[in-house]
Image (cartoon, rainbow, N blue to C red):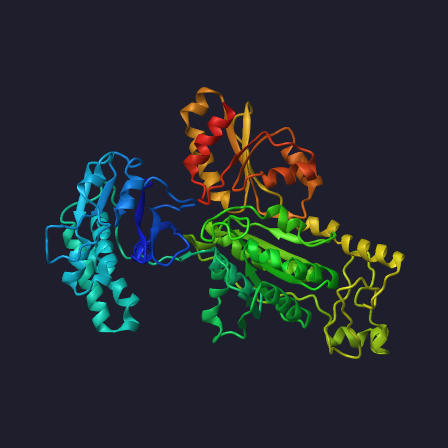
Length: 600
């Protein structure tokens, strides 16, 4: 039987909210449980409001929870923001300092009885976190006290938490380990006999599963593709992609370079790729704006280029630490004039790993840019998944080698005979590297002839444009068609349609709608359509699959960008849309309610 518990831990930035969530997720993993964790925080170091939302289950999870079964309110604001949404059987762990205790270090933001007014739950456990942390030996451990309390109400054996704390603080020495164990014990004991009414079977379990974020999956996908160079400029929420490969810099032949800006980063990636080194850079929408000129250079020189765009709300600085899907049309059309490119939008960490590998393969095979679209939600969420990391025995490269050159009389006789941009039926020209054999490799950002020499000849311009665009026919065949699930009933069908990170919430919403009495009463049947490979769109193959279907677009932008793209390419007009632009992720129940509201 499936058991789900959502734990929400809220407080100010600087109170160790993420640390508590991380501890909880790691202990759950050691017990063989599944978790889906998201962090919500403001773009500030101290203060404001932050929370960790952790969903725990004994079965696979594909989306986050929303309504907390257990709320841990470390400050007043957390209590005030959540008390109206709590369920009657929700359990509240309240940071309630005894303000009459002159020996306590009072947190002015701790909760009082007045903060409970309007709370739907009567199950409130009051814990003085600061006092217990001080008793343990340091106020800095207040978050560990809270963690101990959470584990107690979940029924987790204390030894499992103790073992994790020993591992986590091993590098900091015995005193730090003992301090945190004492603090956790204080919180555990403070919970007394209070237990949440849903319980898991807490037994140490070895599994082949891992807890991973989309950002780390992207980094590992690049390493698995034999990517050797990672130039980047830090920009939330894309920084985690490159940061995830830094620990491997001393173990693998890779270079991680923090450039002075995004323009330098993309040009470094292009330069390394031109020399034959697989390279990848990552950024967010604002940084991608600066990279568009480099994107054009990669297209004109037909140099492979892989970019991760981890989206966030805009324009300009927008909401630096929030999530959105606003860059789709921009990425597809970025840089002046028209040229082929690949755009992939994975929906899970496992899909991210495979999409990055695919991006390197396709970018080099067709000598075009490839862009992988993540967002803050997918990049930073920590999800339990099967250990899908597999490095191919041989990584296929599409570069002429010395043997190719020696075997070709036309290339071995004179340096001037090699045509880097020779016109072929496929549009793909033989790619040699500089200083390779007895040939001359020319490159320029200007229009050029087959040898790579600058040319302003009108006929040559037409030929070169046609050459580059002739790759599109084969590129389209590389694209996977969307995942489609049809309703069981043939009548009154609607399809929740999305792309990228909305995959999990859409699928879970579909599962809820199958059983929803409101839908049954009205004879409404739901399916879903999820896009992962987006551009170039194979309209000829896609059109018969979605023709005569009522599409309800589910997107995190204000202008229904995928809906517009589908209409542009296929002529099919979507039926309705569910758009979310507040910077927060989709939750399944939100999609359910909006879908039924939209249809009515």
